[in-house]
Length: 346
Image 1 (tube, one colour):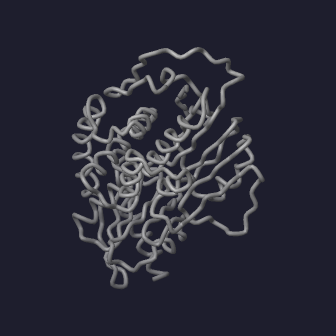
Image 2 (cartoon, one colour):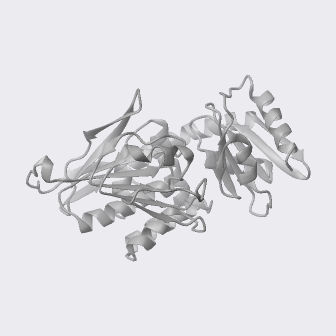
Image 3 (cartoon, one colour):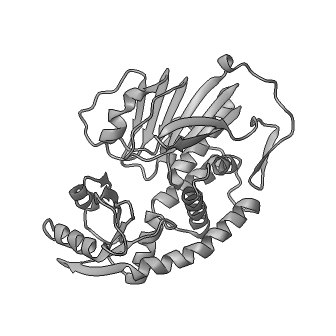
């Protein structure tokens, strides 16, 4: 089995390059390096089964991709797998493959509208977000496994493929806890590791391989990468808190913070919750991206709030797009605009 690493370059064109030598049962993943014990015979390109896995670039998506790797290794031979981190606010690029899996990626106007760019015999779309519309038609080769009631996408992948082994159970637990904000130490470490790979624009295939092999305890090169990130993260936390405003709107205490790239939306919201004890946390990114989170005892419907900025998600967690860049210079003005707009609907 050959695993290729995706590169999203300039004009958003997908290019696959060999990242790792063929992965087989005789190969092991050791300290972030792929080590090959016995080389497999070369398989002609035309005889390989080409599989694309599009996954959301968070821990739920990452663990979902690792479960798919477990399944594909068992069920198929002569595989060429390309893992592609993806955001539902993007459009699918034109590709051709034998099979395509889409996991933890919402059916949005952009993903649904660009589905015709994906050419494959079979497309399996597994997700736990609500579709932007229930009145949608899909090609016959697309199989939908959509359940907004599921706490995570990785749990749906597990159920779909009936995976009950110990490694799969641990992977599902990790991804589900991350997506439901049960931020235990191991979960937080993996979220931090995932974030640092995103920030440095590194290929996340080594993380998928490590999870698929049951290596949930972070060690070696991955541990050194994580520790380096944690030192940077402390500085990023201070920046976030220095660029935070707290307002009360109709009885709701809302914290709005501008987060640097080194912090994910979930991490930033967690910091705001702990430091301000706010009921609702709104995280802004430089690009204008918005993340909405709430305290467990809150009744505010964040999906309704996110839709003010063309966003979507769940009642308890959602996302949107402010529509313009946000910096330290205009942050306070942007925050007051957000307060004013929310005040009109609650």
